[in-house]
Image (tube, rainbow, N blue to C red; front, top):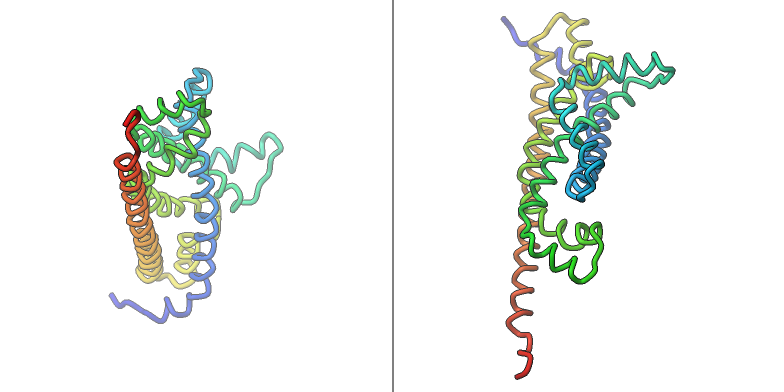
Length: 237
């Protein structure tokens, strides 16, 4: 069996098109999913019982059903009620809500690693719940959140290949087009495997650098707070 590199070279325009669609879909769906997950995590921890159960229901539904079925539901069922969307839009929406359920649990876990005393102290000062999360909790939780988010992000980028089943022209779909034209599955799938590997390696590297930056920020903030406490004048001295 011969590996024909020329097939990959001739297919570069299709591979570039598929890569662009993969970047577009993941570039929109992942940040949107993180925003959805963050709101869900905060809602679940807010103490509102009804809001909590709605969020738990969403998370359990998404996490306990295959992503493929979710994509089919959005793509095939919405037209039955008069909502028709382009495949790429369906892919972005499906992936965003799929990501959101997983990011919600990551964010919730990161928030719960912060000592409860900090929240109680802020509440004693009359600071609102959402302000506490934004100003007190979120800056500190990054060093806990990024490692788990990195692995999840890479997995979700790979899951975007499932969108090829609804003819979204991303990488996997383009590989199928190439194979249909050339009857060379080894070359087609090898090409996209290398592209996915390169993309995920770059994402992992970027997130690792962000993790180091967040850790340095947290350490500097902690050290600064410690110096402020030590240098504070003693009441009654």
